[in-house]
Image 1 (cartoon, rainbow, N blue to C red):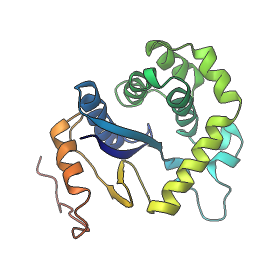
Image 2: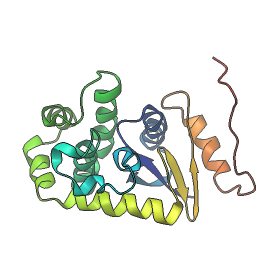
Image 3: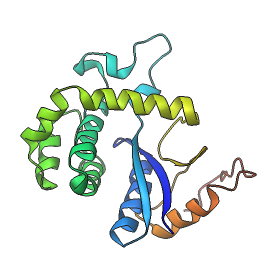
Length: 195
């Protein structure tokens, strides 16, 4: 039976990386998942009240993650067969190589490494469609599920914010998906991390 769920992402967050890499590993390993990868802008979620939304600001004022989300959405929506490669590479650029995702040259390198034509992706981003998609999907996440961060898993009307401590662990993903519909559990948070 196909398991359907969504997972939020912002390339700035290491915990989003851990969970999204687990989903990618499961998909590549043949798990029967129907996954919606949903953008959630941490730049927008940290916007002070009364300030314009991240997507309404000029490109230089949007914050460090918005451009990468635009590129990711352009790939997700126009080249879905390359999205998983892009997704993992974008997280790696930020968290393994400490590169600035607001730098288009970095995103071009990520695109090339994922087998994409960076000029084609840049052209798609330039249309503004991926920015409109980001605004629409982020707003839906906040209004429909009261999403406040990444990664958040969504199944139907249930949404759960989760932090995996290790990268790419399919067993952590499976356990989380099993708990997602257990609505009598509201919060389970360790007071300290045993490391």
